[in-house]
Length: 405
Image 1 (cartoon, helix red, strand yellow):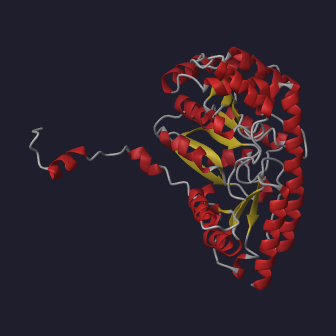
Image 2 (spheres, helix red, strand yellow):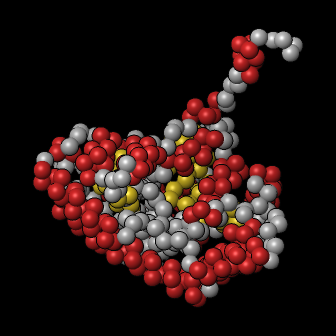
Image 3 (cartoon, rainbow, N blue to C red):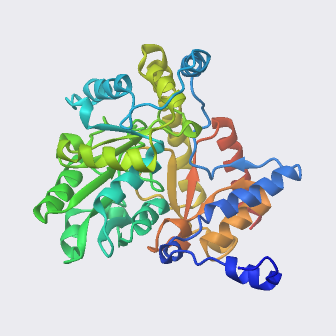
């Protein structure tokens, strides 16, 4: 190209076509609510955020101190692509202590957050045109991870009667010649519900009988309230589980998670990790070692009990206000509420309802649009990852708003 080429021709030559897969990935609409709430805050409004899926707690001092020690000691170089051996050992020890499971540390892949773990799993298992079943509603990025590798996410309406979770009957009904596996989360975002052990076992058996893979997102398992959590690894050693230091361990911005994969797939995941990420953040890995100290675990358990206290307050109040919560969320920090009995007081659908609540009460909640196609206009998600007193104030504001309507 000549240096004298007119600017318009240069602009045309530089125009790039994005890959077709990008068009299958939708914007994360919750960020519109975050942006609107941010504008109100900057204008001086007292906004109560019940929208973001991030603990209001941060890493305990012992974890932060471990990070600083690594930085001061210059321990910041790349680690093995599968993660620090000491951290993989510690994670395996955590499975033994919490679940009574003997997980070979060699099966553990430390990742740059659970998102990187899900990307690795989809890169390893999903080919062009492969269908992957998942419940509707579900975390939106899960379906986009599948789309990013040319797969087709198939969202299966999963009603309250099924705890908003995929069942064996769903698998049998929706499995086709193009289906390759399932991707589920227990506990779930946005519903906060877990699969019962029987439901999980039945679903995994249905997938196994069809020669498919199962990816189970367990990032909220540490935040279980009414029962001891049951890992899918206790039911099927061929399952791939995803976990994270973000939720129970309060390390969202540290970008650290892990996978447990079948032994025969470890070389596959190692090769992908080497090429796509090199390794997870080194400082975060050294900090995470301190998560398994008695001091840190005592703090995490205290915080888990505080999340449960918030849930035990919030759900009854929402029901008193007219929201329908047909299934008590037993994990995470979300309530997925049906607005059918209250929406008429403000607007007809969840997006307009959420914006009206934000505008009139300065309480930020999330409409159901992001989470699937099964009646999203009737649902909103409340996050109780904010202080108890702020949740009380948010409910008082809603009560005053509805009284005016």
